[in-house]
Length: 288
Image (cartoon, rainbow, N blue to C red; front, side, top):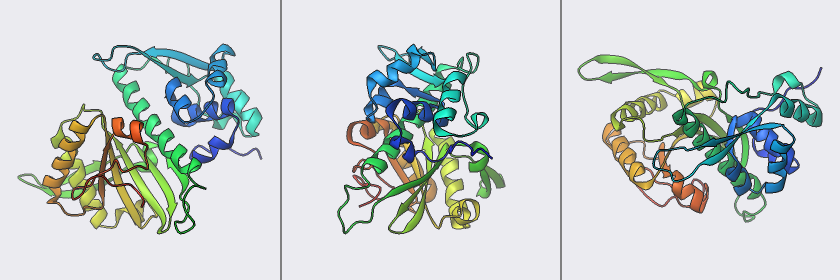
């Protein structure tokens, strides 16, 4: 039986030749910018050749009205999926790909998807390339899986809310990364914020995750004993707003559960740098 494409094994895709790695990242993440693939070390010429060979769609997108220019967005074509299946020796039907019609999404939808794919690439790249750089006294970090399927991430919890009493709070993160650290498998639930939701809406979600965490949600739902919720906001100002919102709705409790950073800082410094904060402290790294 032909094996299926490993959709959640994001880190090991960096071991592929650059052109095939780019195709594989597009299969996993759907929409990725040319620049982000290049920033994580893939050869620009190899990436450009994919469009020339008609293996990917290439789209121009103005992510926000205030942006001066456009970004080049890539999406996997069926031909690219078939080539990738042949190279990897996997079932072609197991590789997701885009069509011309599925590429016609709103700028808001694409902007959110690109923010998620950017963080996924930066985190996976940092863990993959840094696996041999940590000192002998610090165990290497390993990305075990990266899940974006909403059905696999969804859960809910009942929260006591005034004046409505007990209300059901849906909980669906954008992704779940499971990382092997010195503490064993650790879950990182990822919330990508683009400033389109009100802080009060996200506050209810934070309150829900706090209650869910207290009731053993991480172990029950994802079989991990250690879990953090990472919020990646577009800029420092928005990060401060969401951090303060979280502090207010949780009373500053569970400081180690909620972590915040901005996309700007992650791009400039790296996902594993001291660009994170929780409700108690700033300038933290995810792992010491």
